[in-house]
Image (cartoon, rainbow, N blue to C red):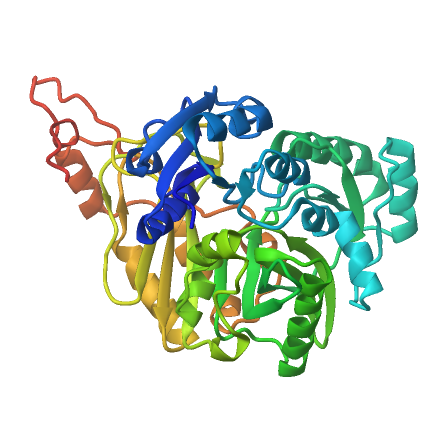
Length: 489
């Protein structure tokens, strides 16, 4: 087993990896940018190393600096989490050359599937259904515009080198193609170090279903069942579920088979996710994420396993941590991503210092927290504060439990998306499980409409000497307000 692992990430995923390492008796080295000092991961890690300033190219995407840190600080392995260098085959290869274990698939496997265009070609070779697309090397405007016309609008422009919704744009007509292409390429370059994109037919009435997979690097693969990730905003998931996934059983079996065949084909190692669009009895391969997923906790809950510890032990031993026959899902789990943003202003990100936070603990409740009271949410990265996961016997019970948990969660200092998520959960299409990928766009694209406070609430606010956005207001009489004194806690 490793004695020290470097973690090249931030926020709640860095905390998640540190906790897994602690349980395995492994020391942790957190690699971070200079603005990520006041974070929970920074406080938990055994050792820290500043990679550079906030811009990702100068910190989390700086391959040479990450490698230098591992060598100088004596880390035998590096865990990339998700995002940043997690799907960068060049970095995985650099680690291999320098005898630093990359916790994830080999560089060759990543080149096969981490590159989305290559993955689609392999899927076709294995007789897996795919959407009409263009994955050619020509990246100039005229060539891509010509290919888009062949496919037929609407289409998706997708980053070749990464996922998570970054670099993914929908184009509805040729008139808007040029501007949207430039935006997609710029975002892909910033997020993954490569501006390469591919084009794909857009399907607007399908569910986004993914199969969690796992491999030992020696040609063996497992499927860890399904997740429904259809609730998305700008192609980034908001709510994810595992357990009761409402698609035909015959389709589920085909998805398991296809996903495992893809894993075996490239001697895949560790955790990965094969993503599909499902419409009725038809399904289409989208991509394979060659990394840990943000939504991995819901799979862990329904299967009672630890995917991060599984990643680490497999990287050290090349032995599968589970057998297929022992993996039997039970119950239903739902995850919500809690962002610092204004639910009443189209999800405008919020920045600043977090105030008092209260997470209502209890059976079947799990909180993956990246930032605590006094920490600062900056404008440099995504604004996710934490993830809230609930587990219950049925989906209906899980929805009810999540509503209770979110109603009791308290976060001071910054606006969050919790009001929006609660509205989503009360929508009839979410309750009956019929939501598809366009669900958010059709029902919540404008965010929420702010409601007037009742007279009672206005009086309370006035008495506390606070205004409606929670800022301290001087009373003029020299008396410190409850907000300033901390009495509001």
